Figure 1 (spheres, rainbow, N blue to C red):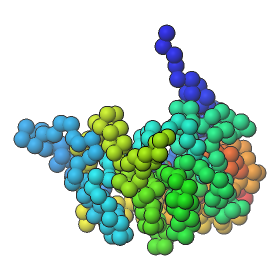
Figure 2: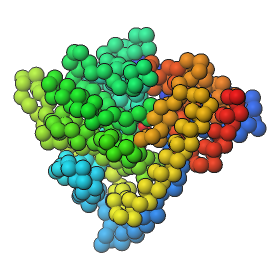
Figure 3: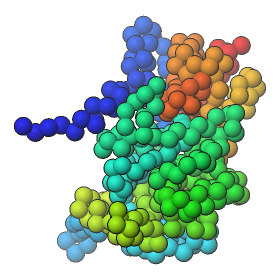
Figure 4: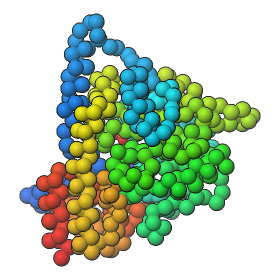
Length: 408
Ligand code: PLP
């Protein structure tokens, strides 16, 4: 008899966005004529940059000719893309990485979920709260998170990030083996200063811990003092793995491409005390379980690093950030407490009734606008909702006008 991995059964049945869809569908049954605007799920809406389209067409043409046809590529990604990443995302910031430290993937979700395979099942983990749900759920699936008690996993340290502590997670007083950090943050849209990030690197070095650093939204940073990469902090190569995504940077949510940095200096111990390079293990893992990202997607990603590509993707980022600016100013005018939205495409709004789902429903029924209930991202998200800036200008403006009418 094959036995199931029962850890899966501990996961809540419904994924947050499925719950939202259910409530929206119930509303549609009652009011079929209502035109709903969604500022909920964080998917992009604007088309791919012309350079990306051109690169993809060219790559498809190459595939049509035997001489330039490509089959399986390197599991770690093609060097043309890895080199472009080194030259553009890291070198200008004074970060010198080796090409073998870059692993191209099919988006950050896979790797942020899979990376925990590198550490033993009984390591302790810490997360900022609220949090991108993949970090915890992937640990639940292999039994590392324990059981749910009062809405929290028993083996997970939650570090609350709320308006009261200015969304700055407190460094734990005791040792945690692995810490997940995500900056700019999904869902709160807040960022971490170099000074605060340095405290985390120092904590990890002192405690022999590892930081999984999710930088999926780094392209939205506008404040020059905010770090784009944890490797801007001295010592981080010894303690951190970093995740990047082209999904939001360049509208690749449907194209699928991103990358993970696993520095060779980063090691973890065996029970016997031997130090093992995690770069070597991740390479082994990828060669076994991953057959690379498509050549076409990698050529598309390479194109965003050309001078025209950089300009074009920046225009789309600016487009979304104009939405964020308008949302911030409108919400503030209406007297709401709002956070994020300056270096990230998310606005985190403190609800007036202190209840995320109640506010979600009131907004849905009152203004026909969908937001994401903050409590779906963790216990400290209760009382907040998230709005995304990834809509079109027209829809965002209309949603804000409706919210204005509804709230006065
Ligand atoms: N990390 C964070 C914080 C995210 O919000 C997302 C997507 O919403 C991802 C990673 C995954 O992005 P992708 O798999 O599209 O690269």
